[in-house]
Image (cartoon, rainbow, N blue to C red; front, side):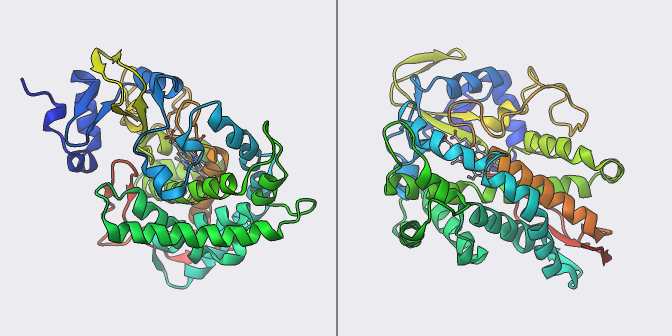
Length: 397
Ligand code: HEM
């Protein structure tokens, strides 16, 4: 008998993930997808189990696109090996670190700069003209490489991601990734040569100052993990801003509530991240044979925990496909659930919330351009390809 998994291709999951994931949860919660050569794990409890058992489901996959494109980094290692860089780097992305100072002081002003840049036009593509510059400039500032300009940082991000998604080993795509990896590596080397660890207030200086168990971080540890941050820490806030802006534009009642009570923007941010889950999956490799959700997984099989599906699991959430700002059902899985939970989670949330809130505060009459119909694309990474909007007038800052 043909299984549901045998009939599926990545293109189906990119086109209509909600319907397919609901069927998988109901009929084949741990499903082998031959066209993707991996298992998809779709129920909340099983996804949580995979993410919390690195001894059974390893992040040290072989082959590893992440290690090939970026160099060995924390997301390609299991604890305790991964813990060293993670522990040393996490404080920079928390409220008491450089990210906290950035979010409290500079982030709203940075958002205003990019709004000012489009203000007179009366129309823009929010993804390309606003979210991408803001997310690139934010991470560059926190890292301490903002002298490079946001365009350069965005170009690195796109170059690295080109090779990360190069599943068929296309030499031209690999060359694009190689160039970004080497160029960024050389620039980081120069910055690290000049860091003053006694006074510089940026994440790169924190990384040099850090003293995790086993001694200071090596150059390679710093550079490879910064490549990971640039490849992963820009697209997601970009998609997050697009998804939240799209949601608010499309829901006048929600928009009125946010205008009347701006503190609700926090809840709106969380609910948009839950409902759309910009990073769809976590990929691991089975260390041994194991039965999960009634399916027999073999040692060496690739296993994908589908965060997007966990966030829509009807046994975990009430009416999960509905955007409900009043939901009180606990944390979601958009930043993952285990040892590799997003390092930049706190900063990412601030960028999405402040970035989107400023748009609605400043661009009066913000709405979709007359011929715009936002289309969400992607399975691994999901967001609107474009979000063309118009507005009537600009307030402030
Ligand atoms: C809305 C924004 C964001 C979302 C939805 C998001 C999502 C995620 C997810 C789901 C993971 C787990 C991946 C896995 O286990 O395979 C992850 C890991 C990671 N994220 Fe984010 N991310 C966001 C923003 C950021 C930012 C701003 C940074 C900047 C530093 C960042 C850096 C990282 C790093 C370094 C890891 C690997 C952590 C580890 O291996 O321990 N992310 N992110």
